[in-house]
Image (tube, rainbow, N blue to C red; front, top):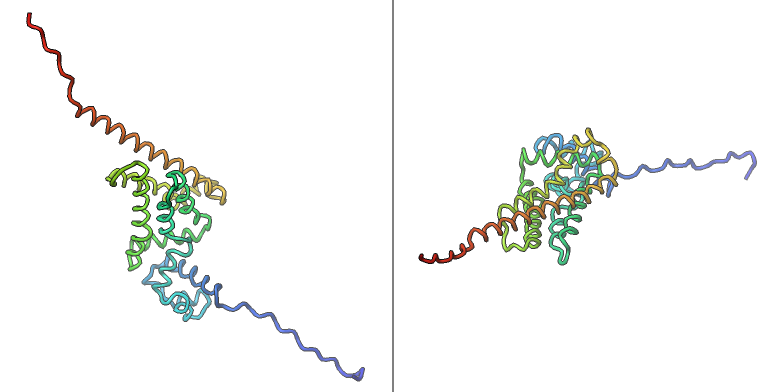
Length: 249
């Protein structure tokens, strides 16, 4: 090569931007849809709008979720992780004590609180579905409400040695499940009054332990009430002691 010949080099190619497909595109679609569905509802949110804001081709919705309904359904389960079937499985585990079962249930129920803003959007979505129900509501009611409720009712009946559930067992079940639900419903109030209660993963984990103790106290109170009621009924139905016959003077 002549020293005077110019040295030519191949220019470096700019690094390729990551492709908007695969897990990344699906993730963006899901979380964009969650935000829009929570803000506007199912009917007022178009697939075109979701795809545009997610920065993907509209065909990706049918590829990953089949259709708009499939995407809407995924918004109810995937962002928060798991569903009511997890709680049913916990309550049905053979040999698990009531306290251990409740602790696992509470741990699973409040774990999503560690996701911050996503949880707010999920709660907003659930509330909107209650006010503007779609076909998703029936599935949601059976899987995430009725199923776990029945499982906890059966767990309590086994612990209290009852053949069947009465109204008070259902009251007790709602009282127990309400312990974790109030953390979601009152999240804004808790953060305004005592933000440290939800600030870190560790503080959220502490809730699972405390709620378990509160729930056990509720069960013990119900057991004591039933025992006292049974004793009262036994006393009321017991035959009166025979009176000694009077001797005639």
